[in-house]
Length: 247
Ligand code: NDP
Image (cartoon, rainbow, N blue to C red; front, side, top):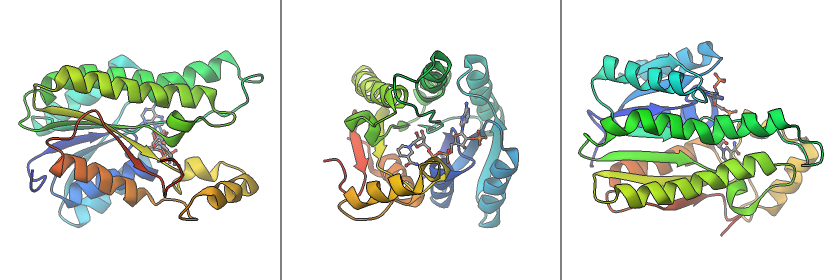
């Protein structure tokens, strides 16, 4: 795929942080983008306006993707609005960090629901349309924490590691179709999610990153565009974008 012109993409959690950067980068490359959000409509509208400003085409859809009926609504709205679907970026995610001893069942289940069960919901609804695309793409935003673990993050690590297993298995099942399935594993990226980490802890993390800085949302977005445009023969992979923190 040389350009993403005429491609239609859904970015879950596309209203801020990494998702917003992915939506912008896809739109800059010509894709029509559905920007999903859950709560903060004003932020999703801002991303749509930014895309419209440079002549791109975007549309915001509210849906809590951890609920299967809402994920189905998101896909149906996309088809109603743009008539097709080529790219699904499963990006929506949350953290509810706590050491396992203090972790309550609600926070365990919520993190698994939003980070992992949502991906089942989105993929089930989207797959029939992706299979009709000449170059369908499923891109799952996992995490370095799913690869290496994280203190106080058993729930999040379980969800993100689950995404990697799901990526490889679905890639195998779809290998003979035109749909590729890949995961991106970001390291620590400067978004609201990371701003929630206490300053001292974050400084310690940055010190451990071989490149000595946080990643930028755009650096993840460029990985997504690469897989969409040039990834015909790339499937079942984890693309690590982490400044060398995990190799
Ligand atoms: P942010 O917290 O900045 O943004 C999260 C996005 O997800 C928002 O758009 C939010 O929308 C949306 N969202 C949350 N819950 C739901 C839901 N139930 N349904 C639909 N949308 C929802 O996160 P980041 O940009 O930092 O992270 C994006 C992804 O990247 C996540 O999957 C995260 O786990 C992963 N990641 C992030 C890293 C980082 O360092 N930042 C590192 C590795 C992975 P709203 O505000 O409307 O709720």
